[in-house]
Image (cartoon, rainbow, N blue to C red; front, side, top):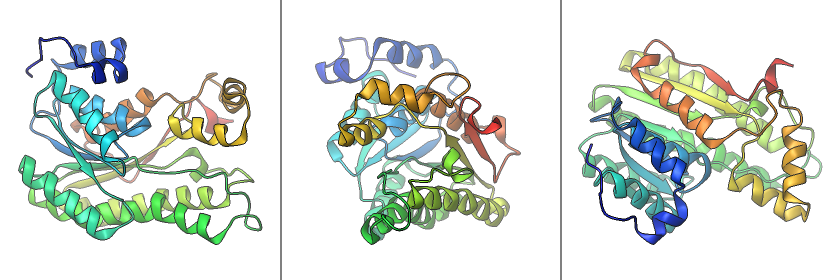
Length: 286
């Protein structure tokens, strides 16, 4: 893996912490994904960004896909600063079939194949229960959290088959198993992701494609920050309240999720499929 010896561009210095850069360099020798090609949806921030950086640090080539092209470009530049040519930025609305098809085609053409997809694109709206939730909020949640996985599978799976098989990892949630009384659409969407993961795993096992999900507890990401910000509440106080039910005492870290995704994509999990793996600090064992 080639490294860039010059000083980092200012945009990278602002977005990649010293510890993240050190972690990338520590893992260079592992290269367990050398010659592997992945698309990461929602790759421009939060869990998707952490996952893109992690997989690239282990040798993968990454299509960083995001609704916001600038965010995808920033992450791709972070990766390419330490590993030239390992990442491209892809702009797509994951709820639109034509956009997803085009993004998959571009990544496949650019890199010469496709070995997997990580579906990190997702939203939470704090929409309320079924009485208070609007039809628009319900439809938006289902489209972004569930339809997006259907669409990436529809267009990526044929390419993964052509490449000899691979792995898909979906982001579900602990709230696919237990529920928050004030989030009817979110709970329904994440429960759907858990079962869609199982169906895809069953159908495509014979194609040498494994499909699994990762189920974080509330994660320390810009998504959570945005939800709290809309309420006007104190950010750190609200995060502490969200972390209180987690036995290990803190919110899920993006790097924790990225590590689980790396495992599920790798040959270390080659006989694991259809699993929804909690990354929750013990939240679900209570």
